[in-house]
Structure formats: structure tokens, C-alpha cells
Image 1 (spheres, rainbow, N blue to C red):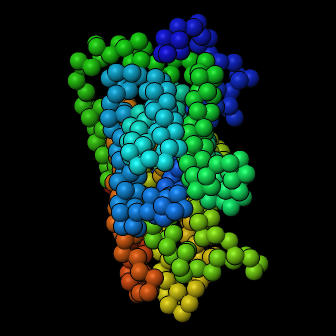
Image 2 (tube, rainbow, N blue to C red):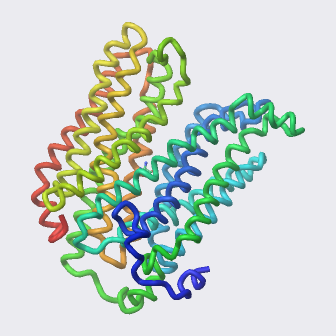
Image 3 (spheres, rainbow, N blue to C red):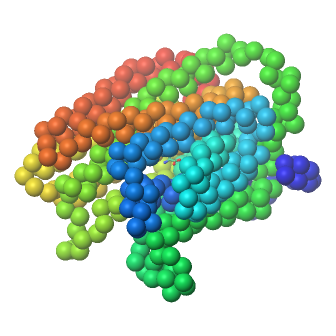
Length: 462
Ligand code: GLN
């Protein structure tokens, strides 16, 4: 497959008319591939827990909440941890472009395995998605970085746009897959077609797989726009010669800078991912979920972050471009990111105090997520971009893997911390959210102090 990708005579430069919002045309290809990959990931994730705990009579697996929670936690941790071997495979063996393709095929097979009701096929599907995402996620991000030259000021902006694609996928997916899996209307449709209505879950999982297939088709059709990006390492940079050269002192210092970002990023995700754990429960049990007298499902709050990102990503993309050389350095952006995620969770302290007297207004959560997404925009796409700038060329995939390892550990911590949630004990909630806020804000202060040293490690990279 790779030879068919590389063998055709491609123009080296894609014409300006084919550029994507002022960015290289390859960004469009990667934007839509990642949109569909995230569609499949978040669509499946939205129904995973519900499917595991649903009784067998309703087509579910009938697991208890503890067991389901454990599998959910392990899965979300491993799916990001797979980025380490996935990045390594791309650096050493396949190159990023082919890794994304192979990863996408494995992901699609994983979702289709979940479309079958047997338990072994369920576990097999999860393993396939972990392996496939490990191959795809870090390497598609590395390819976005490769679209830009070392001094190109559009890089952070490009990652903001890419990040928007991620969240468009993340926003639509739960609506589509959730509808197929859970809605009474679709169950009726299945019955009238002579099919089992309790099999609806598997239609939701299959829809996730279809999304990934659409992403792959798009990736192949528009591969031309990627020019040389992500081809096998030995074809473009001469893997054998390169891998024998040890890293220079400068490269080691940059790797050290990535490690500093890595440590702070774990704290960021541990707080941010409360969205899926303690904040999710807070919304469900302690919030008035009504709009003009109309009750909406608590799970809808899961789409709010994605909507905020879709609205804010263009703002940040333009902001970074406008600021050009005057934009804050990456460690300064990380500091702002940590500060905002801390301020966001701090809003939960008065909300929890109020919850002692009954359910609180949803406005609190609207504010929490708004602050947290501002933080996310300063840290997550910026982090992707910074890793592509700092990683030594031959290690860019592996370093991306390290970036996602921070997400993996953050997700795991978020699960553990979220486990302390108790809706009957508002004082415990004040302590829980207050200490998370304190840790994030203190970490922001620490990173601000470390910023000059981190900038030294980064050398000429901003
Ligand atoms: N929400 C983003 C995504 O799905 C970031 C995930 C992460 O790095 N933790 O890509």
C-alpha cells in the first residue's frame, strides 16, 4: 500500500489555491482523517460504559459498575499508552504515513469486532482499538508538525485547527452512536426490519467503525496533498545512517524540555478529565438539568467541552497568527493552561458549598468548562506543536508517544481522584475540588518560575 502512496509522481508543492485556510493543503487531509478517527473513538467511548452495565436482557454485558469502571479506566489508559510503541514503530519501521493507514485499518476492524455481540469479540475489539490508536494518534499529530518548516509561525495555529477537527468528531459522535445505541425510535426501526432491538448497541459500535472507514477513504484520496510528509524514514532521511548517530547535546536538552512539559501535562489532564468522572456525577446528581422548564439528559454536558473547543479554536488559531513572533513562549502558554484548568475546578468549590442546600444551577458547570477549555487551548494543541518542534527528527514519533503517555497517566489519575466523589458529603467535595485547584494553580506558579530555565533547554525553539 505504501508503494502505491509513494510511487506516483507527486508535485512537490501543492498550489496555493489548494491550501487550507492559509495552511498547507496537507492539513485538510490530516484534519478530516483525525476528525473521523476521533468520531470513532468518542462515539464508541460514549456508549462503552452504558453497554457494559446494561443488563443482558437489554442487550448489555450485565457487568457491575466497579468491573465496568475498571475496564473503562484500563481501556482509556492503554489507548493513549499505545502511542509509545506506535511512535517507535513509525520512527523505526513504517514511517508516520503508513503507520496512520495501518492504525486506521486496525481501529476500524476493532469497532466492527464490537459490532458482534459475543464477549470474546468485545475484548478483541478493545485490544484492536488500543493497538490501532497507538499507531495512528501520535503519528498523525507528528505529520501535522511536519507540514511546517522549523521557523514557520503558523505551526501553533495549524495545530489549533487540527484540534478543532478532533472536537468536531468528538461532538457529533456521541449524538450519532448514542442515538443508534439507545434511542427507542431506532429500536423500533430494527424491530420493523425483523432485527433484534436489544442489538442496537452493536449498531452504535458499527457506526464508529463506519466513521473510521470514511476517514481512511479520505486519507487515501487526498494523500497527494501530504507531499513528502511522513514517508518511510529510510526513504526521506536515511534511517540507517541517521539511527547510528547519537543525539547531540542540544537534542538531549530539548528532550529534557519535553520531559518537563510531560510532568506538568499529567497534572493538567488529571484535573481536566474530571469532566468524565466527578464532574459528570456532579452534573447527574447535584445539578438542575433544565432549560426553560425542559429537562435534558445529564450526559449532554459531555458535548459541552467539544462545542467550546470548536468555538474557541479559530479564535486561538487567529490569535497565535496575529501575535506571530510576539506570542508567549510554549512554557508560558502551558502556565496559562494550568492556571485556567485550576481556576475552572476552583469554581466547583462554591458550587459544592451551595450543593449542601440542594441542587445547583447548571451555570456553574458552564463556567467551569469554559475556563477549562481556555486552558486546554493554551496547553493541548500547543503541546502537540511544541513536541514536533523539540523532538529530534528521528524520534518525533516516540516523543509524541511520550506526550500521549502524559494523557494516559492523567486519565488514570482522573479516574482515581474521581472515585472519591460522594454526593452525600459536600464538604468532601469542597476538599476534593479545592485541592485539585490548589495543585494546578501551584503547578502553574512553579512552571512560571521554571520558564526561563525551560527556555534555555529549548534553545532556539520558542
Ligand atoms: N481531546 C483531545 C483528543 O482527543 C486530547 C486528548 C489528550 O491528549 N488527552 O485528541
